[in-house]
Length: 458
Image (cartoon, rainbow, N blue to C red; front, side, top):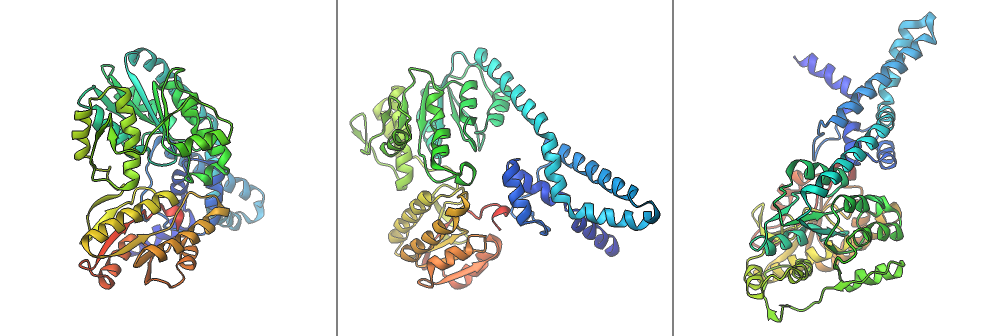
């Protein structure tokens, strides 16, 4: 048994097919991001630590083509050295194994035309189906760099008692995800459908809008998330504005003043409805036990409620009991600490908002603030070091202690913190928790938990 395990481990080390299929999946099947990650992780093994490979049809097809390409490569190599066939066979197997990341990428490229065809087919079918099945349904589309899911959650809570409302669950916000959901889960008797829309490239939100033409559109923000994909602020703005450009001509287009200014700076002119910063709805004051960023998201939801004539007394009553979605600045207890769980996603803006919420909780509890973070991801390479160094300095100013996970952003964070507050480091969340429990008493600290992030960040 032991020798069998040793052999299997050696085989996985020689042919790290699963590892690099996992990298490809984490990179959302994007060719250039995969190539960059594969080069950086070429000799890494056992990459699956924070998540696992999902064996989708696309992954299975990629794996099959990859293995076929490796066999063809080895066979061709052997034919070039007929006088030393055994030696050539051994060498070819070793080379094919070493080149596994390349062959995974090549298999992915081979599949791209088929994937594009399937995506187009699925999108067309969903568009045709929804044109008939959803003809009596009003679409509310929510896009933005951050704040989408919280805004969607608040809209649903405000509307669900007045209208038969459906919302696409979880992270269904891509063209493929939306199309699949429409074809399998949409109820034609739905009055209001909430659709969250996201993109990694210009054109993707526009494609989502063609399937479900928005009657009301919300753009929560144009921030710094996904800059590693878009590259420039101009391309990011181009992608985000598509939720407005793709809506019906008479659709209300809702955003805040900062987003309106960004659109204008980049030449996108729309008739916009701006959210206000007051704590009233239809002239009635409301109270909400929410963080500052969640309150900002609530104002988008209230703008929607006003468009759909939700009564003031009804909305004000609902707001009293609103809570943020899970893992989005959610107060509670974690690992024995009074805590803010902000572990879903992160940008510099949302990181600051999470610290503000945690400091407020710490002040109420009479405790100090301990922050567990892996840094800020999804930035362009040139920005990653600058932003994380800046964030480290921000942590040193606003936190009383920090646990920094040893992601690729660890050096910049450490430089920013610069020894000004107590700092620990750990390779993972699992290993970090016992360390902070040893060093920082739950009786004395409130814990802010930020995302551990994916294995690509380590």
